[in-house]
Image (cartoon, rainbow, N blue to C red; front, side):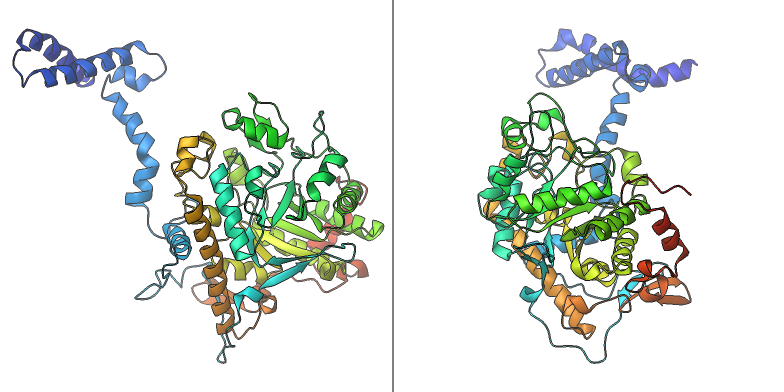
Length: 536
């Protein structure tokens, strides 16, 4: 017991005794710095003994603070000193380095062979052709979005900036992203925080995301305001309207912008009061059934003058999406596009249980949506986007192979403008000025330099995709499908994506003879008049 007390309080006692004993001898020039140091440490130790929040500091005055210091810098120590190139936290160093290199227009070639274990279960690759195709100009990789009910279709790039709001991101980050989108002729999704002055500054194409808070077209009671919507949507810069039903990081949770990040600018842009957390409800008030959702889509399309209108969601209950498809068939109202977000997506903060255990991953969600549209004979009328941890040309090819028409990336473009994955987005203390409203912190982000990096990352990624497609003997991204991608299942077996997954035939859901038991059961549960499942 005595030894335990000695080990716990010895350093504190030494500091106190040394300070007191040295006071009479401060005339010696070499001694006063040591006395000052031990005096400060003694005060810290005294504070540790008197405080009541941390047991470690009460039991180990002065020395107990080392624990909290090391804990505070643990993420940085891990990321810069201990983390392997392939460890994902949530993006690996290899993934981040690839984005940084392409954003800076540096070579991303690697010498001496792959660092990946090609015999590890889950390893994926594209099969190549013995007769590669001529290289296609990546500028031609565009997707025409706008169904038969749309009068202002939009030609979108194959690769675009996914939804990130002003408020979550700084003004300079928004400026850089939008200027880069303008340079590269691709779109910039506003996120649900509405269209800020910084989105408009450089004139890049915008997809206006409309969340449950209806920011930018919000009435005083928080409901949807048609007149305000029509005024904003009339801008030539707004190319499409995207209703956000849910997002990958926190499906069913709504959006949260902490009050310390709600500046006067953000409050004016969103139409919310200052001094309060800006919270988007978890559900929309403008509709409550699949049929009402489609009627809302038709209303937005009319109010916007015929611009493409669609929705983004992370798949949850499968019968709910099938209910929306049944409502499409019953009403004849079709969205122009659907963006499928995977649970692996997410740029802001969310409860740990949501990020880890809620929502369907991108690949399964995308395949289900694609199959449902094919099985209901609607796939050729509705375009599909995909978002969720997409940063490389192979990531794009992978989602195209299982049904997507184009891909979006949020964190990839954050890396391009300087994000270092410090995971402090929600603290307003982002070290690179990307995700903060602190004027001094965001001043470090130089818009002209980072906009060029956004442009470079987009251009070089599509160039790499063009090279991969040519190696596979393909001329255009629309030609890649599930037979071109391969996954290792075990040490002795590999399978094409086409062998692993169920793919419905056109009109199969309507024929009454559905080959997949799961699809048949979900289709029977789906209702156009309610998101609730049909009674058994």
